[in-house]
Image (cartoon, rainbow, N blue to C red; front, side, top):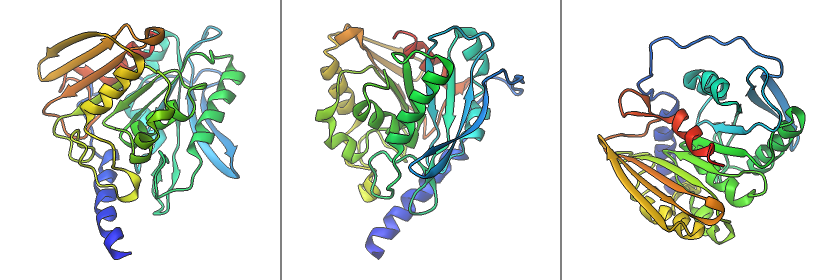
Length: 295
């Protein structure tokens, strides 16, 4: 037990930095939005657990609008994450709804997403997919345009969702995340799906070289280029476009199955972070929506 506990405790301590590592914001003051009908904080009963989610929809949202899931990192708080990202204006201007669900506690009592991990028996696949269907039906959202995205552990979970629930989630965006060891092992179950990956070249928590410890079920996937190659091959995306803006290398693979694309943004000098504008020339929520809006 000691042999297992100490490395895992060290890794969990690193992951707990997710909620404390703040990126450079676009401005010092965030706009204040008055809640519109339908928006708010709600409970959702799943597997005898009261789950919490924060939902936002623009005023006069058209029928069959898209829905974007945004999943926090390990040890994260959904409400804080939502307030931090301030996505209301982006949703208002582009006509989509979004939801920030709250992760449940793992065996260590830490909020998380169970992306096929050994430290949890929480049914997050069931919770998130049932929540998606509930929101689609309640607010008349488009079941063909529900997307999942997340930071760190939320990125892990987004990969798990498009593999296990391809009928619910159209595409995924992983920010400073990767595929867990078991998600990678089960990659043969995957269907062609659009994927956006954004990583930092200096990320020591989720390193792009695939060196993450397998303790807890986190590690086991290969380096990020191999993961990207897997999704490119699965989607049969045979058109490539490589570019660079500052220290951000951009790899886009298009012309895939059902017009699916795979985008890989590598910010060479960035650590474990969710860039919001000035520092790395990438406003991640806008990038995520730019990608999802293609589908």
